[in-house]
Image 1 (cartoon, rainbow, N blue to C red):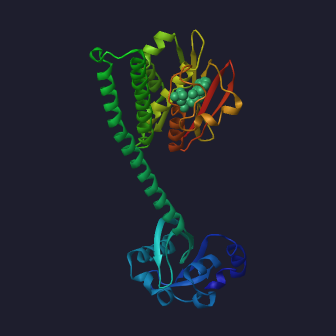
Image 2 (tube, rainbow, N blue to C red):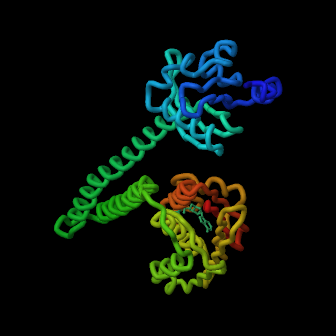
Length: 358
Ligand code: ADP
């Protein structure tokens, strides 16, 4: 049966591949024990810890009887039978395989070649899967830690604020230095509270479980309503110049992203009438958004810094803030498999760009 294939040619090609490739012949389509090995490339032989001579021409039931003894193995065998009969291909996703020498997780797909013949493609992802689980665990712990730390930190702060307020009251007759000190303590405590709240918000990004359909025009209209006071007070113009668009995204996170970028465009702006222009286009299978302002601009050398947590370019006497907003935006964009970047000219304005996968 192997004469149907030029095994020498197949070996030349398949032995250089980094995935495991195996060709099987099913001589009797009603008997799942009739499957034989026709060809195995080097990667697959290594994964099975077998020599070529040990397996070629033999039946699976002779070489790997354990495949018939557990659910995962039987599922693969059944797939060989189905594809050998019907053709096409089936992606089995992650499959656990083990024999007395190896145990691991493999990405596995089965493809038809001609009636009675199939080939299997296998990639060992055991280490990758282990690393993924470890990373998920570490991320979860870190999130929990940030949440607990910031939550618990607020309690002593609240006590500091309320006892300072008590001391501030006239019955303690504080002198000028005492009054000034209490004022500083209260202001610093409130600032620390802002940082803690920002940290809490940062640690809660990605908590939303499901993405939703979001109408971009509607999102911007809602944003204008939320920012109404600021818009009226500073005579802000916000224009959306893109086409009507519906995207799939985590809603709360996306609102936060637009809010941070638009508020920054208004805040870091000395114009009498700040103007924010929002655009959206479809590029390379992604949506690319831009948020442009006519504000103070950002120097080229600072463009990377500003995405780091607590990084600010101005002190709080110039502009209020915690320096976490853009770190937030970056995290939200990464959650949507996108990128964020900017172009800017000092004194003229800034445009933030971000992509969101379709
Ligand atoms: P915050 O606004 O709380 O300081 P951000 O992370 O949002 O924190 O921004 C970090 C820094 O980047 C700001 O302190 C500011 O100096 C600069 N920045 C952000 N957006 C703009 C903008 N649109 N124009 C000019 N500077 C900006």
